[in-house]
Length: 320
Image (cartoon, rainbow, N blue to C red; front, side, top):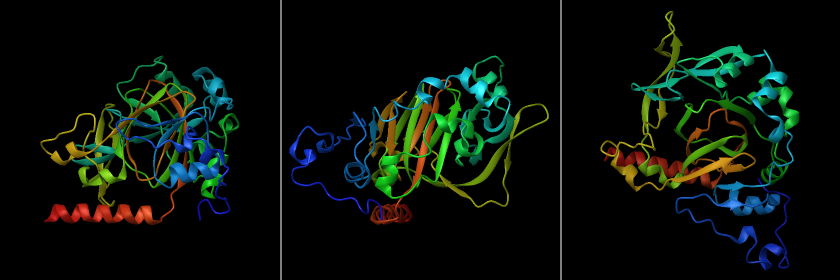
């Protein structure tokens, strides 16, 4: 059980005695995400943020990581070099997104990391969009030489949840690379090393206003002339995905979305976003932004049951 073995604070705890203690602040979800000036104890963080499923941006949590000052593109070029890595390539910057009535996945291109950096640094031009974003713990699997510059887990989060992360992912790409609106079954700690990430968030309670449809799975494939074609994955099940662009929503087609209450935030270098499980998120980035995130499997408890009920009721109402 998450948080097991952690004792509640005594009545003399500074949390209870000090009204200005960060844990006493009730986040106001009026379009912005609250900040914490430092990491909290495992118990405090679990009780004040994980349990109520609230996002926050944490400052001064990763300032001691060597990556913050070492991870320049020149450093990565020297350390990773010509090693072959997985790079997502698309014609439009949208990997894992709805396009032409398909759920289209990127071409997963195996290429020397230095060649990828040449594109990011514009030493080589390409009409396509390149993004290191393989979400299979690629930091530990493909970039193990970089782990010593960060941490294999976030100790206070691991203690709070009673588990280690399922995956630690490394992200680096062009500004045209966009992550379409979706949700994950993970407690997510997203740490920016350089540049910035721009998040648009929706709480799980916005589910009735967010459209889902079933789509044929497909993948971008490069043709002989270098252009992309969309190839159906004929044996794959249909994929439920969100067709709406929250930055430019089609309210004629999806009028319910006008009732949703998005939050927007920018996570800058040296900051950590706590993105709770089941929160919908859409992500953009500055060019060459470097980030690492830690995925901790969520607890399938009452929160999950509540979301499943809300999802089922939303589908049932649309049938009526």
